[in-house]
Structure formats: structure tokens, C-alpha cells
Length: 351
Image 1 (cartoon, rainbow, N blue to C red):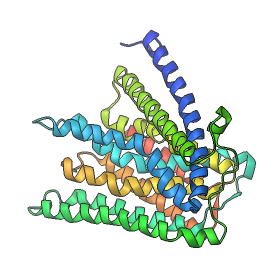
Image 2: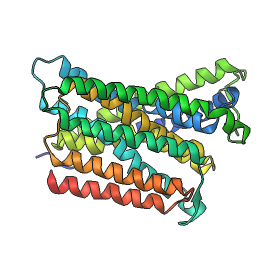
Image 3: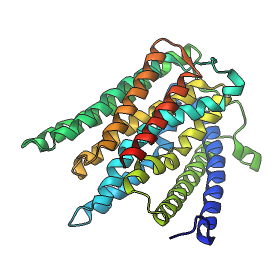
């Protein structure tokens, strides 16, 4: 029996804290550079948040299923553990974004805006993001039920092509809307100087790109270190691989999005904050399932993933309903937080 606290655990907890501090620093560096890049390119906040920020900060959680699937592909016998981690990470990331991430964002501005305070992102972009996510994530879920059919390989090909094409169309529509939104005043504005200029760098495109690269490298490296340490602690206490991939790993991997969005929301950049989350949801709900469908058996052996998928869709539809009314309140995201707790309770009950 491993004692709750020993030298190894204490060292790993210290590692987690150091990684967390450096992830926060890198997120601040990334947000600052991205605002300047969006301003330089005359992009709307929706494009900056939904495409550039979301894809950049989605890299840590993208790495997990890729590594798990690569491990499966390199083995003659598909291991249940890697299969569970790969599928669980793909399904778990949107769950975390649509529930816990939104709730944490709301808590971060609760004192500033009040329980009934309004969160006001540019509405057309948010609604477009959520519509695409609901479509692609539902399609990926339905793909689970065709795996036992004799022509499932053909259907898998059609589904993956549809998912990839959907994301391409999403990017095109988001970019197309940018010019009009900028004319209406929804352009990206950097309100603080580029941080590298404080170290003597000249303010130019090279400095902006350099700061972005530095921030992304630090984000990915320490997010990966954080995930690795979480794995060590989980293994010491014999936590279920599926529970690890569905709950613990997504909390760690979604940290860049959470921190970026908190920074932007507290600075009253609601469009950047929300589109960073919704853009990442579209990315994860369309492109990541392609990996799972093509390179795993994409099947479920437990009721837990179905519960997680259902809660993800309920949380997203609740979010979309309020976005359609242009009436997103701080307390609305509290409901998303309750849905996350519901998922935790279900996992503990059925595990």
C-alpha cells in the first residue's frame, strides 16, 4: 500500500506546481503575441480566437490520442489500455471544454460581473462554431454504431471525409466573415506592448512570430511534462486508464485554453475568450475523431463514454440556446459546471 504522501509524491506535486506556473506564463506570452498578430493581419477577434488561438493551444491534448494510437498501430495486438486512453482522450477533451472550462471562466469573472452579468462574444461566430461542433461530434458518435456492419469500412471513409471537409468549410466561413466583422469594429486590438520589446527587441513581424513560437514551445513542453507527471501519480494510486483519459488528462491538457480564455475574459475581450473555447471544440470534434475512426476499432465497451458524450451534447446545446438569444449570463456557465459534476458522479458510480 503506497502512503498518501511520500518523497516521490511530494516531488511530483512540486513538478506539477512548477509546470502550472510556467504554463500560465506561456499562456500570457501567447495571448499577448496573438493579439499583436491579429491586429497586424487586420483579423477579427473571431478568427484570431477560433482558428489561431484554439489550434495553437489544442496541441497538448492532440498529442495524447496521437501517441496512444501510434502505440496501438506499432503493436501486433491492440492493447485495451492504449485503446481506452486514445478513445477516452478524444471524447474527453470536448467534454472538458463544454463543461468545466466554461464554468471556470465564469467563476473567474463572478466578482467582476456578478452572477447575472452578461458575457458578450460576437454572436455569429460563436453560433457558427457551436453548430459545426454539434454536427461533427454527433456524426463521430454515430460512427461508433456502424463498426459491426459488413460495409463499415466504406462508411468510415465517408464519415472521415465528411468530418475533414466540415472543418475545411468551417475555416473558410470563419475567414470569410472576418472582413465584415472588422468593418463593424470587431477587429483584434492589442492593448499592451509586445512583451519581447521589453527585452530590447524591435516591434515587427519577426518579433511577434518569435514570441508566438517561444510561447507555444513552452506551453507544449510543460503541458506534456504536466501530463507525464499526472500519469505517474495516477499509476502510483492505480487509477483506471479510462478514468485517467476521460477526466484527469483533459483537465491538464485543456489548461492552455482555460488560462488564455480567463485572461481574455477578465480583460473584457469576450469574443477572443469564448471563440478560443468554441474553436478548440470544433477542432477536437472534427479532426481528432478522424484519427480514432481510421486507426482504432472506434467502439465502446462501457456505458461511461456514452454518458460523457451525452453530457457534452447537452452542455453544448445549452450553450448554443443562450448564444442564439444573444443572452449568455455568468450563471449559465454554472449549469455547465453542474453537468461536469454529474459526469464525475456517473464515472465514480459506474467505474
